[in-house]
Image 1 (tube, one colour):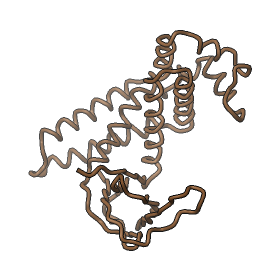
Image 2: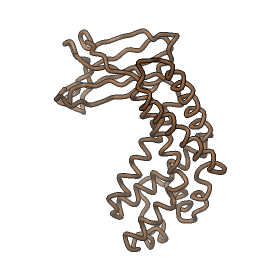
Image 3: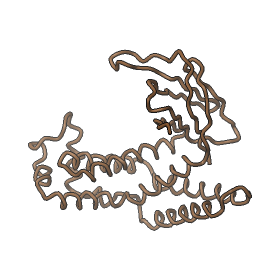
Image 4: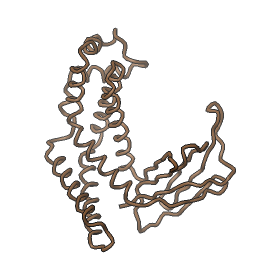
Length: 256
């Protein structure tokens, strides 16, 4: 069985924001799990970036709207006889549960975390070029000398206000990614272009290429069409070049 690298391209600002937050949530989880002093620093930075992102915009409201939209669209599919009703029922129940849990969370996520003095000090010092040194913030140095399990518990507490947001965004993206099937496509001389159906709101493109491939896709998308150029770059010091040969790949156009 062939393994694939998957490249994604969001087609609107909402999905772009969800993908950015997904990346930060994954970064936090990875570094929390490993738990060294350096991992702790990166996990805290991820929390601060999540806090900054959610402070700038009403992400909670956007997530609730998208969950509600997906629920409405999926409920309409229940009228189709070819749909797996048991699987659809489970997904709808999961979405309703996430809506309820997110609505039960008062205010915007992260208000408690925002008031943590150590995190506020780290955020203030983060604008200094280079990593925060011990002489910049002795309080951070002191905290990093605490036992590993205490530091882990602190970090988990600071992230907790974002946990439901994390789960809800992951559900949205999982449902979206599973909303369509792959098609086999060919990029002639490394170039592929396709028109977008105005009657179908494509939200996410997923391009799958075999892991052993020596090329990667550069995706450009507009309101009416998108194009993919498959590029080669054997030496990062040099400018990438478009493939001259035909490229077989899998395309998933996700819409719900």
